[in-house]
Image (cartoon, rainbow, N blue to C red; front, side, top):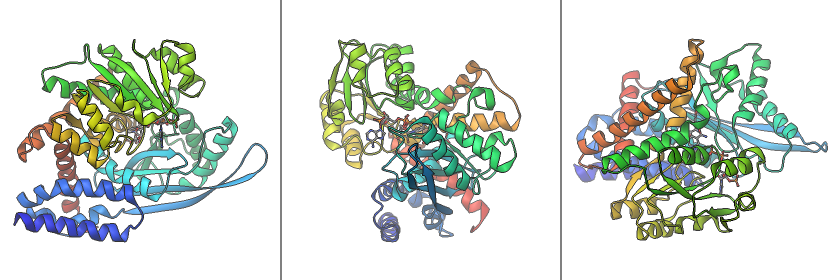
Length: 450
Ligand code: NDP
Ligand code: 2IT
């Protein structure tokens, strides 16, 4: 019986792999989930009815569209836009938009697939989706990026809505872009539908704490892991990769909790600051000037710049938080972290650790918080924004942050409780995958073959 389900899961995965050829990131995300779920099927064979796994792995809808725009010199550019509406069994599709030259269907599908289970873990009524474009905002003027956002929304507006699909930000899409996207949506629809996008400005329907939420939530989740091991952040040394939205607010919260962050990175390299990152200087370089991380060293001369961003993981630390992009932390990096005594690794980015790196951490007994649990605070606060929009209310910063902290604690408990129930005590990856899967699968079985 046990072997039957291992083989069954492998055969379903092979069919998915063949049907979605040339999509390695998508295969990676599906494989991890299916491998965790075999143990659930052994205990509850009814999940293998109604073609559940095959339906779960096939997106409900995938939209690919042309995004033409004109640059400041009058040249015409054509980008490709995506929205993968993966699963709406728990609520309207929900998930971010990524603008980055590396965006393709494989990346959007893996992100949308992960989002289904992440959103389920939050306990909020939201389905899973992701979108974006292979547009590179780097070096573009504000007017070029605004025109791009307007062209993107001119097509996307046909497929979204507060009860249908609610996008938000991700890499390359922050509050500024959400403003341009929302402005164009409002204009196309002649309707002030606040709940159609999240991550809005607080004066026009946005929620307090949404900007900080992914980073803060990640650190709350990591704090729970530390507590579970009889530790806290006070005195811990941390390394945080990336220098964008998630990384910056992770660093802020770690510092508030008494930890010290000694390294951060961007796509051009990393900085090591032996006295701890000066966040005001980093905010000036990355958020105000939108500059390169090397510029931090001009403001903080004690810091060192290193060109190879992957080598950030050679900096010894107790807590490692990869917060940049997928597959940024590989097996070699994981071995180095373990050798240097890392205690906790938690994913702020989506799928930043390769499967081989995760195996290294689990084998070494390092606590590993997978992204779909650890970085769920962003989307959870998006759901709080939807709640405020639906009731035309707005909550204070303190109240909203308290809600976020409670949600992250509950996700931690759900991971720990579920992992123990299935014989994997302390294994957050198994806990998150199983708890997320069961919630979605139960709803899919209840709603029939759709
Ligand atoms: P930002 O665009 O604000 O920042 C991204 C950071 O990662 C930048 O420092 C960027 O460097 C670096 N980066 C991005 N792509 C690459 C790449 N291919 N190679 C090297 N470095 C790269 O994005 P966010 O902080 O919002 O997102 C970071 C991660 O967190 C992503 O994986 C995202 O999916 C995930 N996430 C985001 C949430 C959110 O609410 N924003 C919620 C949950 C997860 P550079 O500027 O040099 O390109
Ligand atoms: O990966 C993610 O969870 C996000 N980019 C946030 C999604 C959202 O809808 O807030």
